[in-house]
Amino acid sequence: MTTAVAAKPGEQAEDNPVVETYTYYPGCTLYTKAKSLDRCARLAAEKVGFRLEEMPSWVCCGAIYNTSEDDFAGRIGAQRNIVRASALGDRLVTLCAACHNVLKRAQARLNDPANAVERQRVLDFLDEPYEREVRVLHYLEVLKNDIGWEALARKVVKPLAGLKVASYYGCLMVRPAAVLGFDDPENPQVMDELVRTLGGEPTGFDFKAECCGGYLVVNRPEAARVASARVLDNAKSWGAEAVVTTCPLCQYNLDKLRKPGKAGELPVFYFTQLLGLAVGLPKDELGFDSNAVDPVPLLEKRGLL
Amino acid sequence: MSTSDDGDRLVCQIEELSGQRVADCYQCGCCTAGCPLGDLMEPGPARAIRLLQLGHARELLDSDGIWLCASCMVCGSRCPRGVDYAHIAEACRQIRIRQRFSHAGPETVTAAACEEIPQQAFMAAFRKYSG
Image (tube, rainbow over all chains, first blue to last red; front, side, top):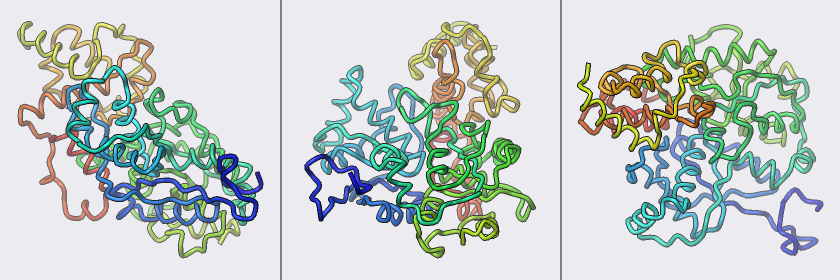
């Protein structure tokens, strides 16, 4: 296959390659505090050769998966999205690590034969047709499995040469591993592979799946600061010049939850910002003005801007 | 200290809500060792489960530790016995919240924090802290 698009055999005409389109769930934070995660992803997808089509009438995923056995209502928002997405196709692409985690777990719960009674009650309540099983895919899974690293490498016009990046996955991308099925929960690799594909240098990193403190920032900011500082200090100890993440809350806790103006801090990118940079999006589309630690000096030093 | 009947009833409720069996834990301490907030959390995961094994559910429900859990799932992910303390802490919070207890509600957030912090944090925190 010569194009980067993983079209099914027979779907692709020689002179008119089918652009694979994925139903896309952005979630609330990507519309407000994490616009660059969303915008770079949409624009980079066009460069790489696929398209994100936002599902209409999506609702909040709930931001955190409710594990209480009897709390059907706590999961119903996420399951409503799954059911609505099922009318549009058999895939739903996410970007926010929290949305991904919640939607994927809510979907697994809905489809688990052991929960048949709960499933029926939920579907009766939703009163919308559940057309087919929907696979919840993270954008990184699309890049790795559908596009493939080799094809993506051919789309790189500005290799991130010499940029030492620590890939930070946090909790929600990898746990619980049995449901997420995404990557090694202790030593995940997909973002390291992406950084390498884009021409950068992934560093070692002990705390790539350690918690940043998450939502404790709301009422226990000191606890979140302790957890996020430990993650950053470990990245620095491995020689990282920057950190890359896919979670708006990880990005906030690592990038913005520290003493303003403290010297020597690492820029914290969304992976879509680095992807966008490497596939040739112009600087003003990359949203670097939303980063608290300005990444521009580092990127200029490496000749990338 | 709770009476044993009260304690046993609450332990059953926690086990039902969480889908976990506290007797499965053999107290190796792997959960507390890996907990990113283990040095701040009182009781930490292993001690919390031990309290339940001994029927002291009330002590755990009244503790600060259940509110400090960030649901990062490292404890359950590494447990050699398949016990997920994050689910247990969640069940404890749910029991308190269903008794109309609010650990922290939207009224605790400043306007400045609202401007700064991503929405997902508020959604997650208030679902964990006040239902």
